[in-house]
Amino acid sequence: MCPCGRAKIRILFVYYQLSSFVRCDLEILKRHFDVKDLRISTFRNPLNILKLFWGLLVCDLVYTWFAGTNAFFAVLFSKLLRKKSTVVVGGYDAAYIPEINYGIFTNRWRRVLAKFVYAHVNLVLVVDESLKVDVLRNTKLKIADKIKVVPTGYDENEWKPGVCGKENLVITVGAVNWSNLKRKGFEIFVKVAKHIPDVKFVLIGKHLDNSINYLKSIATSNVEFAGFLSENGLLRFYQRAKVYCQLSRYEGLPNALCEAMLCECIPVGTKYCGIPSAIGDVGFYVPYGDVNATVKALGEALNWGSGKGKAARERIKRYFSLKAREKKLIKEIISLFRMS
Image (cartoon, rainbow, N blue to C red; front, side, top):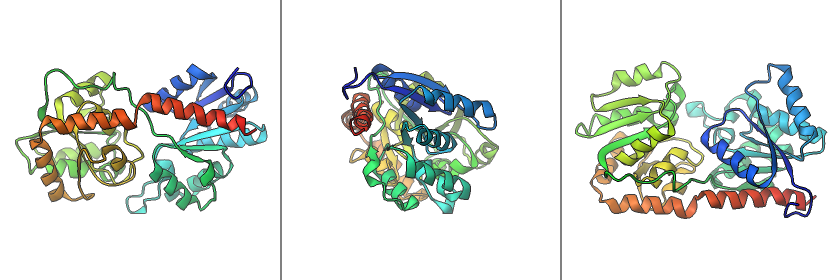
């Protein structure tokens, strides 16, 4: 029996891609509930619609990350079958940033799907308070009572400092495409490197389109483009780097930033969305897109002692632990059935 006094809750976990934070939730839910996972990458195949519908027939709740197409069909079928539904919002699915053409609400058809999801889903989980504000503003729906803030959690035993000490190395992480050049500040990152020639800058992330050619064309010799790395490869960079940059215009709660801080990287970031939630008072802030201010902040961060990095690790351990997410996540799901 589950704590809500009924048989173990049966959950259909629907996902598009099993990224680290999605996998984390799947593992948490499997420890507490009867979970069946279903990967759906497209609904162009009618068989996927049938799989989702059939899966919901034998489940009590459907759980999915992001308020996109998967969530639309999951919530639609859950309404038809009188099942519960939960959607986790990560960032894009709350955003409307027309100046950089970013966010689900910049697209007319996706906006319609997202509004349906938010209007009819039983529980919306957001990883940062700023996303709740954006969902309410961009949908104009009166749904504040069903939006709960449950930050992502990070394993302090997996993401930990190395034994060889820090190098004068500055890194940032994210998939490289034309959108992220602006949204994640990769163009600024590369331009800043020109002004600090004696420091190595590394951009880590899969190259998704030819935007990498543009970045290489403006890069100086102290910039490296590492491409996609495994978690172990990423960990080694976190452990070596003294500074981690999050120069974004929009983020939820940035996973790479939190992982890097656990590895005692000193954070330098903008004050958008979940970035200040992670950094707090243990890092440096810069205006978005300001090369000179970023150069100055990086200079200060690179000259800072190890105490700032240790404080960064302690902040993530305190506010964004994996155990805290597990506790809150289970509580919110069980509360759905207690209210039934």
